Image (cartoon, rainbow, N blue to C red; front, side):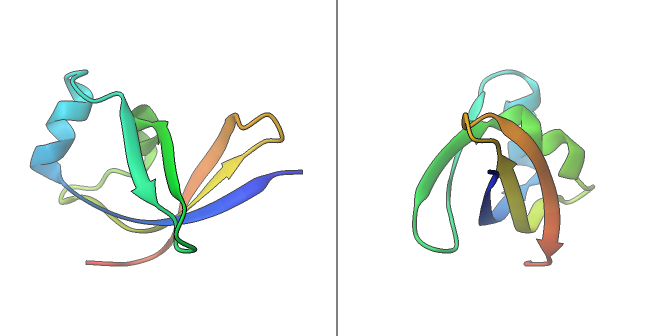
Length: 77
């Protein structure tokens, strides 16, 4: 059974440089239901836009808590 978590991310493009340069390898976010989660920062690469990473995202993990997918489910700016 997959676990689906929703998070609102607001990461400006200049801050993403730390991710790409390897200075940040784990991101911490608050889910929409109030939990704090940690996930590998490299999973954000597929959702980066010119202005950064903004929006509400669904993160999917498998039964072993391994990352499966990330998708934008709403805009937030």
